[in-house]
Length: 388
Image (cartoon, rainbow, N blue to C red; front, side, top):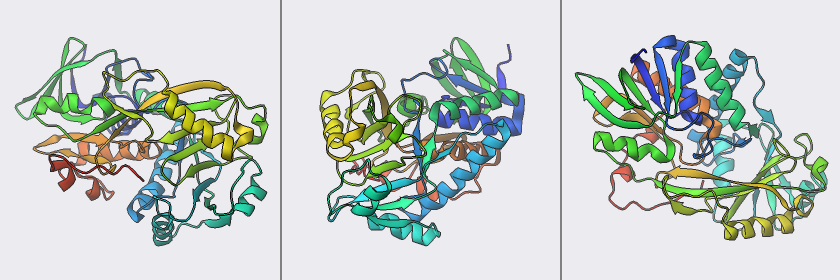
């Protein structure tokens, strides 16, 4: 069995699968992807049917990065000969004095030249009568928003990585990582592998792997949940009739048209309790569910019904909720990504960037704000701000 590779990727979730694909495009059979659980497992943060993709973001830098993300997905679609991204349009709702300033979004899109529409409550309800809004609500509408189908995207990345010659192994937990004469040894599943460049994309297990280098990031892991509603009006929430949406306040809710299950999907952003990868459960939190149900009954009454299914996932967030995307400090042959609980829309691009860091030592994209040694990550007790 081959045990020496130029590139090894640890973690084959959303970002790791993408990194394996983009590396395989350049290095083929010299790429190894290792997953501690089974491929496609639901213990992390990047499975399920759908994630939001959008150009609407709170800084110009993220808006520009989102433009490139759409381009990376398009490259994967062309390469895999498979349509992935589903455009539905998207609504960002706001009210006076909300805790998430909508002006951050409009100013950022203005700076990046991204068009959008301002709609009052009456116009939203005229276009999408599924909504029941009060007069103080308005919305930003951006037509490029839609669905990144998480499980399908992950499968496409891994299928194409294999097509380019990459080796994928699952059920192989890492037990040791060592520097060896400028290379890296990885023990996983009872086998010792050797590599020139290591990529870590391990989500909630990031610090478990960084401990082998004597390092730790101030990451917060929360257990989040989504619900699919068994509405009797599912046809009104078809993707061609209903957009993705985000309620820009605290608590912040977001949702999808019918996709992957027989009813629409709704969740609360950062509504879950702090856990670890080891202590998380798969049991729904009734308090979160009560808040989501209350929102849906008030604003989307035709979407409401008994749950088809309730699913849990993990967010892994730096204190500023910006990505970590960098070489590991002191280890230029180790590249690292942490998605901060909002990265799936960027997953293919982040994988591409990781491949550039591993092969070229730098990226063509501006990732300076995502340095692994930025000031807040070096603080002993950094202030946390998870609103985006």
